[in-house]
Length: 111
Length: 113
Image 1 (cartoon, helix red, strand yellow):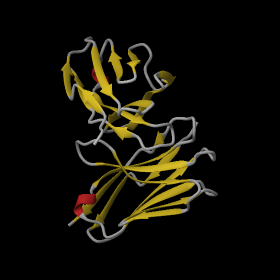
Image 2 (cartoon, chains in turn blue, orange):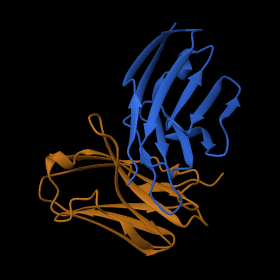
Image 3 (cartoon, rainbow over the protein chains, first blue to last red):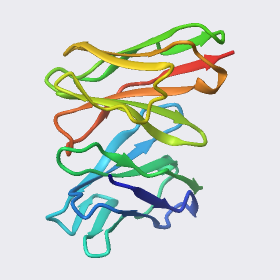
Image 4 (cartoon, rainbow over the protein chains, first blue to last red):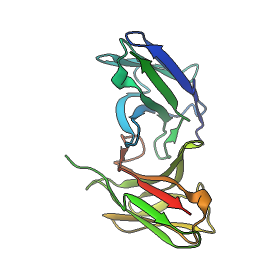
C-alpha cells in the first residue's frame, strides 16, 4: 500500500517569508495528492490538491508542485501570515485504495 | 453548506466502559473513514467503508474496536472495553470515492480515565 513521508515535522518562519513542506510517496500508481490544514482544536480542512496529470497548481499564496518521476510533491506558502500557523498534512491516494496521510508539519509564523 | 457531523463532541469515561461514537456523513458521499489523532501519531486510519461495506480495518485493534455502517447516513465506532491508551480525538470523514476530497467531522475528544 501507499506510504507517505513528510518533512519537516516542525517549521518556524518569520512573517512574510516563504514556507515549504515536502512529501514523498511510495506507490507510483498514486494519482491524487491533497494538502490539509488543521488549526488548533479544529478539524483538518482541504486547502489545495493536485492530480497526477498536473505538475503545479496555485491558489493565491499557496502552490503545490508534483514530481512524478521522483515521487515527491511539495506545498509552498508565500508571504506567510500568523494565521497560516497550523499543522499541515499531505496525503496520497490511488483509485480504489485508501488515502494515506503524512505525519504532519507544525508551521509557526512569527510576527 | 453540507458538513460531516459527529457525536458526542466530548466523552469522559472510566477504563472498562463501552464507548460509542457516531458519524453522519455528507449526504451522497459513498466512502466513510475513521481516524484517530494523538499528539504522537498524527492522523491514523482505523477503518473505512465504501457503499457501507467495510474495505479496510487493518488499523483497528480488533479485540476491542468495531466499526459499522447500519445505514448510509450513520457510521459507528465502538470501543469495548475502553483503556486509557484509547484517549485521543476520533475523526470521521466522508468523500465521494477514494481520490476525492475528504471532508472531516469536528471530531470526538475521548478521555479514558
